[in-house]
Amino acid sequence: MIVELAGLPGSGKSTIARHMADQGRAVHRQVVAPYWLGLLSRPIRAVSEAATWRGVGRATGWPAWPVLWLRALGQHTIRDHPGVLHLLEEGITHHLWRACFLHPALADAPWARLLEQANPLFVLELDGPARLARLAGKQGKGKVNRMLAESGTSGESWRRGEELFERILEEAGRHRKVVRISTQGTVAAATVRVREAIDRLR
Figure 1 (cartoon, rainbow, N blue to C red):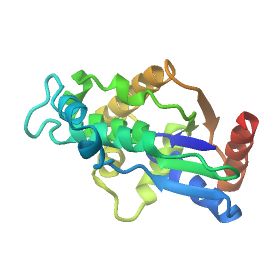
Figure 2: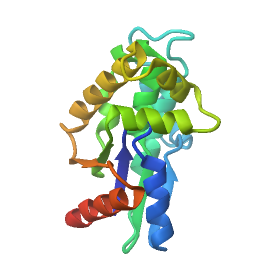
Figure 3: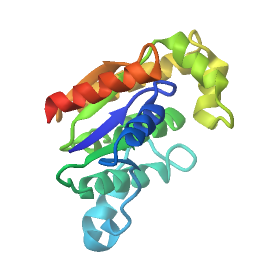
């Protein structure tokens, strides 16, 4: 079974995926990478998709847009293997949110089709103060985490990130199963809830 995890920074995606993998050999974790062979196998479509955008120019989304399309293609190429739970801890939903957060011009790009994936989407949810506490405690924060930590739950960056995430989830729900799971409480308890939710779809 292939499952994509999504969640705002601090919600526990990587931590829970790691805990699930540590608990069983039949769990495989993966960050979805661009499928560059798509440029060779489908060159006409690749060029067309990479060149189709609105409001995206130098330093406002390029080359984020064509790389997003190649990540979506990469997710399509992942194959299911019997008896294995394949966790996409950073799939196209995460990469799309991050790219649009960093490059607001991408909000006008035709990104909805990137979310047309076959595998279910499990959305990890944690309240704002708890997510902020986790971000504040992270060592070596990336650009997005720094922006959110500095913004705080009442800041513009925090509000924009949450609104963007909900917009993306609404679009994803038009094409695939979306399951929301609370990650409040301990990591162990949250991991159990995630595993039980996945098992219900098996």
